[in-house]
Image (cartoon, rainbow, N blue to C red):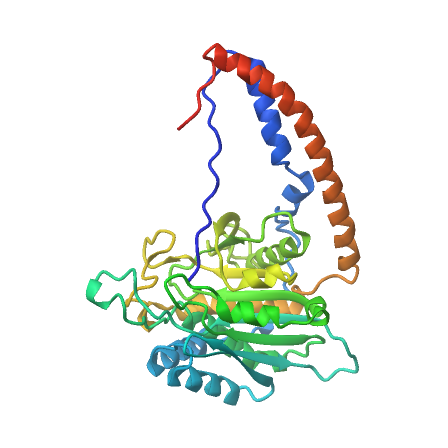
Length: 405
């Protein structure tokens, strides 16, 4: 399960007689929420600089991925410690023998949860290779609290989209990665116990993140999570956390935008084949989501989440078939799986997920500059808030300002 993060509602000021009061309040808000012009510029798409390298070589097969969804659901509920979970992990490993697989078990309630960690290392004469991680949770929800049938809310859901779709995309990418001639490692992580309990706690992802050494964390250039991406009416928006303005995660979202544009998945942006893009990826819209990427962010791994939180025709956020018994294979689209899979595959082919060589040093400089800017903002805030408080008090005494309850 994932959660929508509500936006904080600010004070709404009615038209005031005092122009000075309004000016001071606006100024204070601008100090607390500064807009960086450089950040705005990075969100713009240059339609004339699309990178089309590798598009004609893409191998991702949406139909094969969709078959994986049916296979997973056919096993039954993939609850921690279940035979269905064991069968799924065994099948995943048996069908992808070029990878080095590790079953990572952790205590969970009365059983064990098990993460599956796979490593593909290319045959290159180099050590300390950078790492790209492709991740999804493979467990299915243990209850259907949103189902219309109250007699079935305690039963596990099929989890075709919520769980199954992400695993399906990674299953197809696991087949493709060894053929790409990469010069960096790719890890696949299937997490367990993401969606269990009244309040799902992303237990598998937390355990995996906490077990990482600093050396491993430093080697990871990107953690790319896919979840609930099989909806026929696919809409991928930018997810926060992480917030806009963090250089390493901005880098990953900009790569998503560029890759999607090249593939014709950004509305009205000309694609590499000359067609106008359709509305699949829109990084100008933000969705608040707590998912398996958050434990990675907490330990310092650059991580983003590709997810569609509107599941079904005309669904609202966290609506439709989500967490109901209607989350079945017939609701999952092979075309949608292919859209996401091709973004990830093309990014691997073009090296889009890798940091630049001097990125770490540059980030340190940016962090120091940000600290200095925050200090300046605090000083300015103290000065202006004192002036603003005096003017605000004057305005209230004269009945010129009203606050929305």
